[in-house]
Image: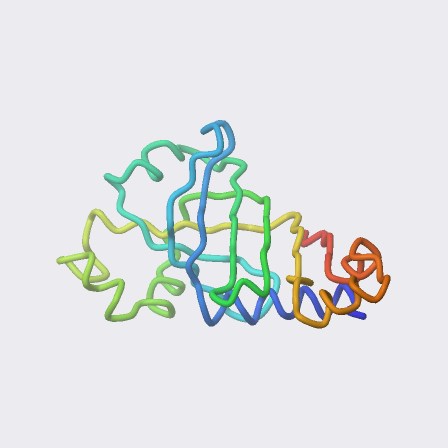
Length: 160
Protein backbone atom coordinates (compact mmCIF):
# COMPACT_ATOMS: atom_id res chain seq x y z
CA UNK A 1 0.00 0.00 0.00
CA UNK A 2 1.31 3.44 -0.93
CA UNK A 3 0.44 6.70 0.82
CA UNK A 4 -0.28 9.91 -1.08
CA UNK A 5 2.97 11.37 0.29
CA UNK A 6 5.01 8.36 -0.91
CA UNK A 7 3.55 8.61 -4.41
CA UNK A 8 4.20 12.36 -4.52
CA UNK A 9 7.78 11.80 -3.34
CA UNK A 10 8.32 9.21 -6.08
CA UNK A 11 7.06 11.74 -8.64
CA UNK A 12 9.46 14.52 -7.59
CA UNK A 13 12.36 12.07 -7.48
CA UNK A 14 11.56 10.75 -10.98
CA UNK A 15 11.10 14.27 -12.39
CA UNK A 16 14.41 15.46 -10.94
CA UNK A 17 16.28 12.53 -12.53
CA UNK A 18 14.50 12.19 -15.84
CA UNK A 19 13.35 15.78 -16.47
CA UNK A 20 11.67 15.42 -19.88
CA UNK A 21 7.99 16.37 -19.82
CA UNK A 22 5.32 17.31 -22.32
CA UNK A 23 4.23 20.91 -21.65
CA UNK A 24 1.11 22.53 -23.06
CA UNK A 25 -0.95 25.67 -22.68
CA UNK A 26 -4.64 25.57 -21.91
CA UNK A 27 -6.67 26.41 -24.99
CA UNK A 28 -4.28 24.76 -27.47
CA UNK A 29 -6.48 21.72 -27.90
CA UNK A 30 -4.15 19.40 -26.02
CA UNK A 31 -1.05 20.36 -28.04
CA UNK A 32 2.13 19.74 -26.04
CA UNK A 33 5.83 19.97 -26.69
CA UNK A 34 8.79 18.20 -25.07
CA UNK A 35 10.61 20.37 -22.56
CA UNK A 36 13.36 19.79 -20.01
CA UNK A 37 12.20 20.49 -16.45
CA UNK A 38 14.57 22.07 -13.96
CA UNK A 39 13.62 21.44 -10.34
CA UNK A 40 15.03 21.73 -6.88
CA UNK A 41 13.40 20.04 -3.94
CA UNK A 42 9.75 19.17 -3.99
CA UNK A 43 6.65 21.15 -4.83
CA UNK A 44 8.33 23.41 -7.39
CA UNK A 45 8.44 25.74 -9.01
CA UNK A 46 9.41 23.88 -12.16
CA UNK A 47 11.59 25.92 -14.51
CA UNK A 48 12.06 25.63 -18.29
CA UNK A 49 14.54 27.30 -20.59
CA UNK A 50 12.94 28.34 -23.88
CA UNK A 51 13.52 30.63 -26.84
CA UNK A 52 11.70 33.96 -27.04
CA UNK A 53 11.08 33.37 -30.72
CA UNK A 54 9.64 29.90 -30.10
CA UNK A 55 5.94 29.13 -30.40
CA UNK A 56 5.46 28.45 -26.69
CA UNK A 57 6.80 31.82 -25.53
CA UNK A 58 5.00 33.64 -28.36
CA UNK A 59 1.67 32.09 -27.35
CA UNK A 60 2.27 32.50 -23.63
CA UNK A 61 2.08 36.29 -23.46
CA UNK A 62 1.06 36.74 -19.84
CA UNK A 63 0.70 33.99 -17.23
CA UNK A 64 -1.60 31.21 -18.40
CA UNK A 65 -3.02 27.94 -17.23
CA UNK A 66 -0.78 25.15 -18.45
CA UNK A 67 -0.36 21.43 -17.98
CA UNK A 68 2.42 18.88 -17.87
CA UNK A 69 2.26 15.20 -18.82
CA UNK A 70 5.07 13.04 -17.46
CA UNK A 71 6.02 9.39 -17.80
CA UNK A 72 9.06 7.84 -16.18
CA UNK A 73 11.43 5.98 -18.50
CA UNK A 74 10.51 2.62 -17.05
CA UNK A 75 6.77 3.46 -17.25
CA UNK A 76 6.52 2.88 -13.52
CA UNK A 77 5.06 6.33 -12.88
CA UNK A 78 2.78 8.67 -14.82
CA UNK A 79 1.62 12.17 -13.88
CA UNK A 80 -0.67 14.94 -15.07
CA UNK A 81 -0.02 18.33 -13.49
CA UNK A 82 -1.98 21.56 -13.88
CA UNK A 83 -0.71 24.97 -12.93
CA UNK A 84 0.29 28.46 -14.03
CA UNK A 85 3.07 29.11 -16.55
CA UNK A 86 4.69 32.52 -16.87
CA UNK A 87 7.77 34.20 -18.26
CA UNK A 88 10.08 34.85 -15.30
CA UNK A 89 13.63 35.76 -16.25
CA UNK A 90 14.88 35.26 -12.71
CA UNK A 91 18.64 35.71 -13.06
CA UNK A 92 19.40 33.68 -9.92
CA UNK A 93 17.39 30.75 -11.35
CA UNK A 94 19.11 31.12 -14.74
CA UNK A 95 22.52 31.00 -13.04
CA UNK A 96 21.50 28.08 -10.84
CA UNK A 97 20.07 25.86 -13.59
CA UNK A 98 22.43 26.83 -16.42
CA UNK A 99 24.30 23.85 -17.84
CA UNK A 100 26.20 22.87 -21.02
CA UNK A 101 23.07 21.34 -22.58
CA UNK A 102 21.15 24.62 -22.23
CA UNK A 103 24.19 26.61 -23.36
CA UNK A 104 24.27 24.63 -26.63
CA UNK A 105 20.94 26.22 -27.61
CA UNK A 106 21.96 29.83 -26.93
CA UNK A 107 24.98 31.29 -28.74
CA UNK A 108 25.00 34.37 -26.54
CA UNK A 109 25.22 32.26 -23.40
CA UNK A 110 23.17 33.53 -20.43
CA UNK A 111 22.93 37.00 -22.01
CA UNK A 112 21.46 35.75 -25.30
CA UNK A 113 18.48 38.02 -26.06
CA UNK A 114 16.50 34.97 -27.24
CA UNK A 115 16.83 33.25 -23.83
CA UNK A 116 13.59 32.98 -21.87
CA UNK A 117 13.07 31.30 -18.52
CA UNK A 118 9.59 29.99 -17.80
CA UNK A 119 8.24 29.31 -14.34
CA UNK A 120 5.57 26.66 -13.81
CA UNK A 121 3.76 26.83 -10.48
CA UNK A 122 1.99 23.52 -10.00
CA UNK A 123 -1.50 23.63 -8.52
CA UNK A 124 -2.88 20.10 -8.86
CA UNK A 125 -1.42 16.75 -9.80
CA UNK A 126 -2.69 13.27 -10.40
CA UNK A 127 0.04 10.66 -10.16
CA UNK A 128 -0.25 6.99 -11.01
CA UNK A 129 2.14 4.20 -10.14
CA UNK A 130 2.03 1.39 -12.67
CA UNK A 131 0.26 -1.47 -10.93
CA UNK A 132 0.73 -3.84 -13.87
CA UNK A 133 3.29 -6.41 -12.83
CA UNK A 134 3.80 -10.15 -12.85
CA UNK A 135 2.62 -10.21 -9.23
CA UNK A 136 -0.57 -8.30 -10.14
CA UNK A 137 -1.20 -10.79 -12.95
CA UNK A 138 -0.79 -13.72 -10.58
CA UNK A 139 -3.14 -12.11 -8.04
CA UNK A 140 -5.72 -11.61 -10.81
CA UNK A 141 -5.45 -15.26 -11.85
CA UNK A 142 -5.93 -16.29 -8.22
CA UNK A 143 -9.18 -14.31 -7.97
CA UNK A 144 -7.84 -10.88 -7.01
CA UNK A 145 -9.59 -7.78 -8.27
CA UNK A 146 -7.27 -5.45 -10.24
CA UNK A 147 -9.37 -2.35 -9.52
CA UNK A 148 -8.96 -2.82 -5.76
CA UNK A 149 -5.21 -3.33 -6.16
CA UNK A 150 -4.89 -0.16 -8.23
CA UNK A 151 -6.55 2.16 -5.69
CA UNK A 152 -3.35 2.41 -3.65
CA UNK A 153 -1.35 3.40 -6.72
CA UNK A 154 -3.02 6.76 -7.44
CA UNK A 155 -2.53 10.11 -5.73
CA UNK A 156 -4.50 13.32 -6.26
CA UNK A 157 -2.46 16.12 -4.76
CA UNK A 158 -3.14 19.80 -4.17
CA UNK A 159 0.23 21.52 -4.72
CA UNK A 160 -0.72 25.10 -3.90
